[in-house]
Image 1 (cartoon, rainbow, N blue to C red):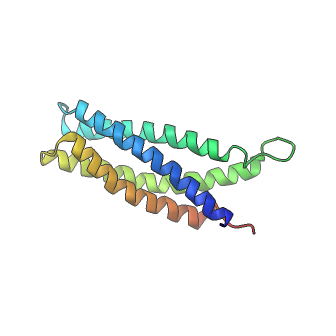
Image 2: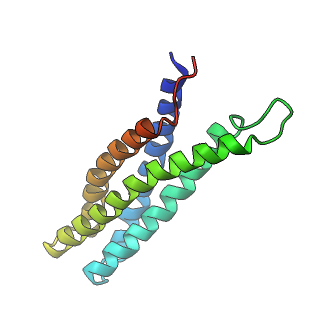
Length: 150
């Protein structure tokens, strides 16, 4: 298997695990905040979602890539790290903009038409996450983060 495919699989594994944890915590948060106004419930749930997602994704991404940016002498290859960080932040950032807008609006809408808060959170998270994953993977491909050197 090509190295770039392995890198895509690791990235998507990290994204998937972070999304699963964020879905769970945001559904709990949405239900706990059921007595809040719909716009507040949507906002607080999105914030909880983002904190959980980025904490888990950042940790997993670091663990998978910590050796990738070391030279033979054990020092950090700062130029490669900087280039790759710009690429991943660009890819994730573009997806995040679409994700946050869609997630907040859809959850707010579902709450206004009387969906249970946990259900609204799960439904909107799943829809938004699918689109987010597509955008992130497209961004990683366009920025050539995992270009094949072989």
